[in-house]
Image (cartoon, rainbow over all chains, first blue to last red; front, top):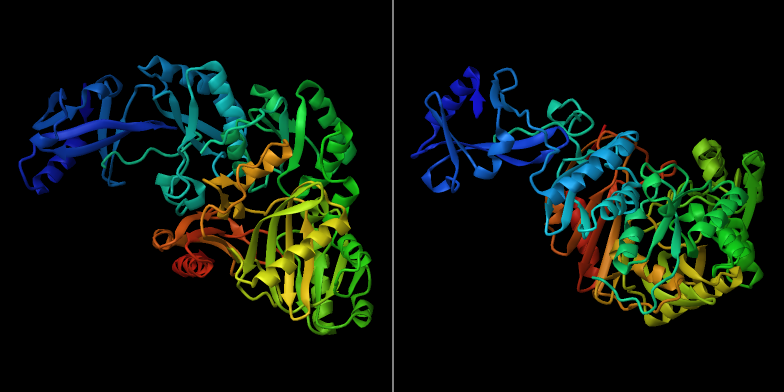
Length: 209
Length: 418
């Protein structure tokens, strides 16, 4: 289900050896969908933290736990470790624009077919993060962030198009965090590769969280 | 909170806003809360306009007749009930297009006069109001000769720029010549000349000592409803006149506040303004209240977030309700005191880092902090600049506490500019 490169296995074993307590293995899951694909998390867990129904697989001496609702979207992923960067990376071949929930998929289709091609021409990007209780949560990236007219794009464009195509959606909420460093208002030094936009959006964040 | 409309609008409101506006969010949120359909008229094409053609209109604010024709044409397909400008840029177009469509609005001549500080001075003086000595020059005039025609100290200002941009004090002829040249350079820039209907002209007024206040209000058939009087507790004595703190309610005596309101009403009448939002700046000294400017629009930047009415109604909700002839939800302040600090740019350079936002946010009474210039961008202070680093908002039990919170929060912020 998940592959772990030799470099990643070695580094994970080193980290595990440094940790205290009775640990079962590594929990790997999906924390969200970003412009560059799925965003992941990894952490070592004990028995108490094991998700109910977690899928278990073994890679070498390492046991990997996967939350059941993440299994399909992690299929075929590879965990790698770059000694040069000192960071893990998860290569996930599954498209982040495919959703199990038909309502979310309908919203995603509007973003993919109508909205993103148009905002891309202005250097922007719009990602669907979640659909919950008939509310679509989105994040804006690229040229949309910091633009004085972003609210016009949101209220007069994105919201109108989504509600028209998917009437079940009651509201569209922009979750772009303008105060936490995830957009150019607070973007750290541009030389930092972890904050360089990738494929029209933000770079994926480190999975070890 | 969602306010209930007594009479739902049948058409839509056209909001004229330049793409550099700070005001889009507040007006669109207000329209959304009130469920009022709006169209946005701006000077740049919007990426999703094709998905909602009734929600967007491309207009050139500098081609008033062409833009008016476009609005009239648009209204044939998407009927308009009101036209509002969110900032200075569109107020003349809003008046002209409203006139063409027979919509309630300020008279065009009144708006033109209010947009031009020289015409404003003429109107106020003509109405017998207290006015400093004023004289208009062209940037092509000889500043040395001009320096001999005026008295000192004086204030040199452009006819139409906002946010104190280009406004400078001169205490003697040498300072005047320097300020004149500096303002002429500002006015010669393309950006300014496109936005400045006063063209290449300079207004020189005798300097007024004293403290400043600002009045935020709504006009109903020429009658002023005061929504807030802001004190500006930081001294504004020059050489530049950087806006920083706005705190409401005013701590001036009731008598002084009555005089502020009376002078404001008199200025509005003198100019002939009749409908919609007004933002008026005054200076107060031992001789009384002096009008500095009367803007036929609401307060600029993000500052309106300092104002909430009733159960949390925004200023923009009131403006939209007024524009549609609907009853106002409430004009009573939602909190005992509130304020905003426009964070000044201390020096020119590149903004490299903003430190201390968390600590500033943690100051009791602080409502919100918004940094509005992205890290990595060039920052330009007054008199050439026209932006602020951001805005700090406070709400508290008294204006003294609100002001103290703003100052404390600002002291915790550190802007690294290189």
